[in-house]
Image (cartoon, rainbow, N blue to C red; front, side):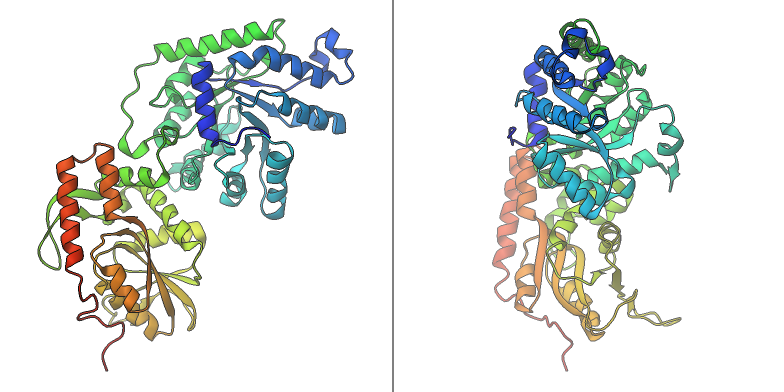
Length: 499
């Protein structure tokens, strides 16, 4: 078994240890194998073993394209297995298989790649959507590289198509960001399209890019490096195959290629500071920490002096209505909700107007759950509905909102849902302001599930220097005061209208 550290941690550790962004491709053509090795019992395996021995000191990874082995049947498959097993365990192995299927077929591909071949990462075709990607990304110890903007000449004709104002490869990137909960999703981005590399780096500052197209395909190395390096001077896995494999001295070719990449890195302009909302996963940030930093960077969590609707003031304010102006952040938020929802019985999502409506819409699209929402004001015309959307009596509705302070607005929204015959037990919010609302609703018979607690947000922002120690302490004192006020959490509240 190969090392089972988190994939990205291993990858970036190897990059630093070898001072290399070079990925050596092992795509053998028996006709080009050196004559002495052609006499071996298994020439492909003998050739690969020779290449791995020579090139390992200069490689951050090895990549094997399965087509070059499958074409030779059982002997080719055996050579593939033996080659993967021979790569030193500290060097990640990527299987370039471009899988793209769903259901039991994908499950079989996952088992073949990760259980049988024991590779560290696989390339995947995203044409079938998240269903084709997620099974490969379930374990942080394994990586998945999603075809995004490939290096071939015809790529732009399809991958550059406009979809609702965005190019297809940009939409694929947004999908991958939403799926990157374990920090193990990367993109395949061709060096032959440096502007696409630059655009994708701006969209996905934290993701590793597998970059083919340098060398035989004519990609400009300096342009690719300038466009794709991340803020830590890493983030690129630059693949070279034929230029190294068939050189009379593969070790020298690998060293020259690694050195050329490092020269390009050295002449690259100093990377700008990482934006708080795009802190790198390999630096040790959890997905929840990244989300907190993103919300703060976009103004969704603010600190100062704010008047509250219920009276009094607060040293903090959570404004998730801003999410509609930041679609990538909204997608990140929606994905956080999906993890809480995945374990809850649910027939319909019921959004509380107004801040939760766009959030619930994004969640509904990701999870393909139908959505409804109760109206604060019943229409006096048309259908005169109190609840928008379709539903049936007896269905289970999970209520979605942005934050919870007290339970009042939740109970007000639940009342018409239950009056219409829907069953409500669970409420999901992004932020619990820890002002007693969770406890109030628990006593009324409802369970609140929150992605983040305000105390956690304060701790993360202080730890990363986004707020001062004085600001953090002021907010903690305010939170403690709020908790003391919750001696009678159900005072004045009722889950249903009084008779």
